[in-house]
Length: 140
Length: 140
DNA sequence: CCGGATCCTTAAGGATACTG
DNA sequence: CAGTATCCTTAAGGATCCGG
Image (cartoon, rainbow over all chains, first blue to last red; front, side, top):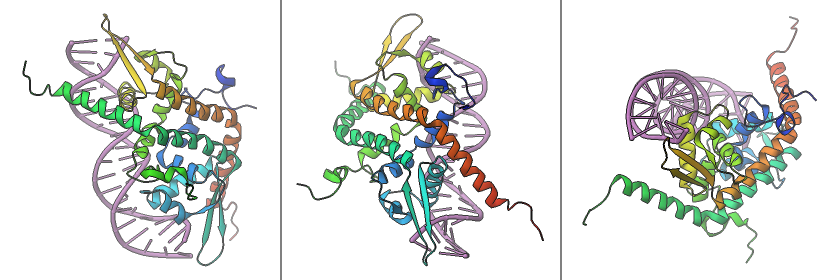
């Protein structure tokens, strides 16, 4: 099928190229809130808007709406509206969405497993940066 | 013991919480350029600054520098300077960095494998959005 | 070659108010 | 409940020039 690109790498598709459609996919996924939504829904259980909003600590309604729309556009998320009063809207990942969700969950799991090592690295980096700018009390 | 809660919520480590250190890790990783750097270096081969810059089509010098620094701070990237003339600087992932790099490569591989399905979803979404705003030939 | 330092643009994201 | 609509802040990112 014609993807609009005839590249030689990776079967005609290369995420490293600016105008490759996979780059656009990456730009959608490469977002803090997008990744959290995908992980939150990864188990297949549908969630309502407010439920998601509570789960994603710190997200605003505007940003959550935009995030959900972008995932819907890529075909990773399905939005179902129940015409009740009050309205009930459920979000669930598509098959494609659950695939990426699982991949992203590996990353969050990895973060949790290695958080202590990472925090130590941060401290070391910041200390070195601080001492290279401020030589401290020189006494030699 | 198993309380029925997700593992990620144990021990005060939960990426869904605003102030959890894992959230900060996610915010570093969840960036287009960060992910591309991790994939570019995932095979363990060190790369020079200009080589990376050429590979990441569209990145600017300033942004690449900042991206590399943030990865270095998290302990995912090692920077080695050879005091030659002209200067030679090599970047390579740490063991920790190669772990995440591999996880992220799964995502880019997935994007490449499913790009046609995703593009079809995009077209469908955009068409529906267009027709709901433009009701077509109106008879009034 | 590898950046540091500036200036500038703009788009993401937050706060708030309102509605079907 | 699940949004839409606005206004506003600010920080990411781009463009340029310069220097070790």
